[in-house]
Length: 321
Image (cartoon, rainbow, N blue to C red; front, side, top):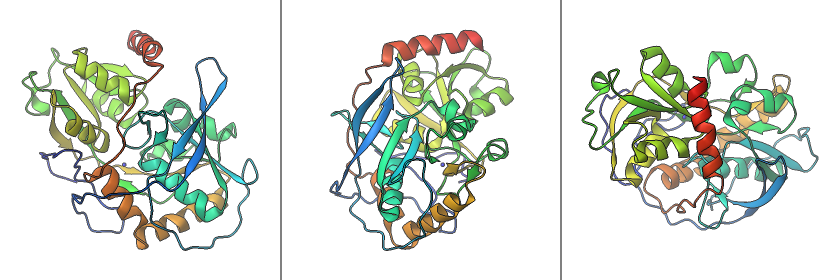
């Protein structure tokens, strides 16, 4: 999930590349899209019990493709691990329904496979390490995850479905005009176990790690940190939502987002690549990019019921760092 050093963001408008093989163009068209399906989501709560909520697709494009049958963990169901919330890739709307860019991709995969979709809420650490896949918690991990050499040693990646650099978001009153303005007096927020955290550590910044992107943005809004570094798709989206912060600079890292499966499951990844190619050629991918990154009318975010406990986790993570 560009190479310019300064990018302007209109409301919910992010200059993102098309998937690999397409020409890079900013997306600015506004779409009116009708939801077509309600899908079951299993969310793993802090007490270890599963709470069922609904996930909803926002897409009306159709996928015309037949693929070979693949073996799934649960017959008749495509089970996907995803770290919620991570807007605009996956988050809860005001009704507690999970929506987002990745959810629409997952729904498209399930529709071509002619199976139901089940999404399991999973920590990003469990996703990016390959632990969730190896434990057979899910068939696929779809969670705005950057393809890296280290992660590729623990899982199989699909062809990239989105190009995505890092970016710097800063509080409007912090006086930060570029990366060069970050010194030891500036606290930089990052999401734990992400490429944003890796970059900030490599630069020697004073960092505070948060367990998810929602708490990272809350930390910036509340003044716990003066700046945040993360994927441009996330921070650019936030810049359009909140006037108290501003997008400062794009960091050209050449990142690409991919869908992951177990190392041994080449058959499933081959089918995923086939479906992704159809999404690109048939207009499905263009529609969801317009919707989620180009100013479309996406559902508003709801409040997280787990905010208090997650903030405690963030404080504990900071102490551990």
